[in-house]
Length: 434
Ligand code: HAM
Image (cartoon, rainbow, N blue to C red; front, side):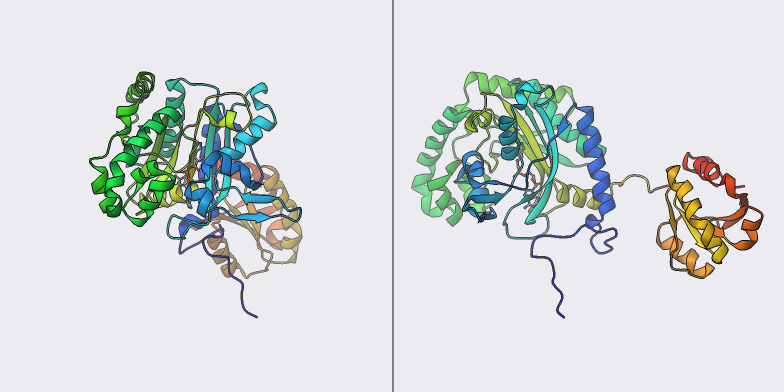
């Protein structure tokens, strides 16, 4: 029979992927734990929304002219004839749920986080997948620059806690709708006479979404853009002051940043502050996280006119960067006990001992395959075992067991009743051995 492999652009997370360690479940568990701890520290509540939504949700929020909606969504009709789409991003579903459940009236309902898969039909390559996962945060209700800084600082702290270095924060403001309309006109006026010199993609964007041309990586486009009007020349006083305050608060918190007037982000709902964290280790897919203000979106989706800001950071890219930078994934479990039974009497005693150890929160496993002692020890090492407990008739008659510490190969005999206390002490950092 032929094997069925996973579709292109998706991947499995497995206990130990020797070739591609970023796919190890333990790495993901570690990163997700740090995200959850941090979310709690910042007073955020978890939200979980469905994997799919009505297609119009993304059309109305992310925008029909964006690549995400236009080219990358997994859209299908259900048996009832509704157009549905797998979520390509987390903000729109969260705001849909916020409005639907009147979370503005629920204490803590305006400070939300999620860790969830997203789906985009993109050309798959390293760092770009058709299912990726984001740790995302959405905070609603405050216009103030202090709120922008809290969210940016949260994301920066996440990277710092994971041990990432050389992460660059790119920061910009794109003003409100009126500012962008005025800027768009000026940009089109400037680019139209040079239309033929633009890349085909930018020529198309000139019609559909001209401001996104600023994001182009094409060298000819970049050269043309060097002389283009700058968005900051179109900001209203109040927008300029807001942005300056964000910058000076970031200075205060010692969060380093670069102002990048070309940063416009690929989703239509943004207004005001936008940001992206980039790293040097991932090649073309160098953005590990991004976000910004989207003050009009809650209202657009039928809710109250609430200001909002958030971010999403891609966990695949974060983990790949951690590996590339040699960051640690936390301490290995300091203790893992493997029970080996040398005869049937030992085997009968094993389930109760295993149960007692686990009830005391001590990680323990039993070799169910009746390996011989030497093979059993080898197997214990492969499982990441730190200690082997040898159970056999001889010892059990005197209510004793043999403990072997695998790192030192030292061996001792302890009372059967002492096992839990003995390993508890080791798990708390005590010497244990005697
Ligand atoms: P985004 O920039 O489209 O923003 O995605 C956020 C992050 O998800 C990116 O910086 C990247 O790390 C990761 N990412 C995106 N697409 C892929 C992919 N195909 N493969 C791997 N990783 C990917 C948003 O999605 C916004 N919802 C963020 C936000 C939240 N803004 C405000 N609140």
